[in-house]
Image 1 (cartoon, rainbow, N blue to C red):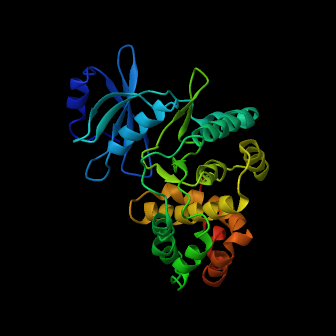
Image 2 (cartoon, one colour; image 1 turned 180 degrees about the horizontal axis):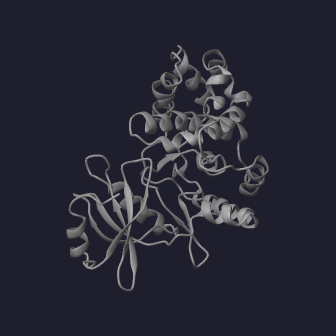
Amino acid sequence: MTPSAGADLFLNNAGWEDATILPLAGDASFRRYFRVVGSDASAVLMDAPPQHQDSRPFVAIGDHLRTLGFVTPCILSQDLERGMILLEDFGDARMREVVEADAGREQEVYAAAIDLLRDLHGHRAGALPPYDMAVYQREVGLFPEWYMPAVELEPGGGYAEAWAEALAPIADDQSTMVLRDYHAENIMLLTDGRLGLLDFQDALAGHAAYDLVSLLQDARRDVSPALEAAMLARYGQVDDAAYALLGAQRNTKILGLFTRLWKRDGKPRYLSYQSRVWTYLERDLAHPALAPVRCWFDAHVPADKRGAAWADMPA
């Protein structure tokens, strides 16, 4: 993994001409990240090709979150025409690796992440686009478009109508900022004890339960039902129907999205998460609020085309 052409010039102009560039991470988008190591400091280069990614929301939402008192990487230099941003380096203590290395810290770390969400939801959403029925439908549409052909099923009728009926009670709730990818791979544990936020550029104004689902029904790591229940209790006043609805919506979207990452983008590693996502989705579909959607799944997606279809994928 190497940065796009022009990265050396960008870093030279930013005063990092003698730095070493090391691969750091990629994600489910076209963005790639590199650690830039100088003689006495390090930074992170975000390489987001502008033909694929608009980095302006990342800058604007990061600034807004900082004004509210949350921790996002400070921008050291930027060239948005080339899609390059040099960021403060939050280090390597990512939430996922921290809790998996020390299970005794799981409750403590998740409690801090829940407290951050509760604080965030105390603020109004601001001037963000709405997370509304049109967006919900577009996202769940990834399932019949990508997932069903991949497991040799024909998309059945009534899909959008089932979702419209189920989501109607919450679709107009745009009361808070929804980060949309608030999970253990996007939360950093900083040396001062605070949590650092990553991957917030797609934030919308939506329902507070969505980010709770992102965190507690994490596609990338197992979150036990006991931990999920404890953290929901810590957050307080969670509408269980809204939580199940948004859990089903998000997990259905993820099943389609991860299939697309495999089929279109050549990223098969995301298939190893599908079985876990099905476990969450099956639990969500059991809620009475999901009755129309559950009926559609029962009619069109047999059991052997669900989690069982992915059970042998490597982790």
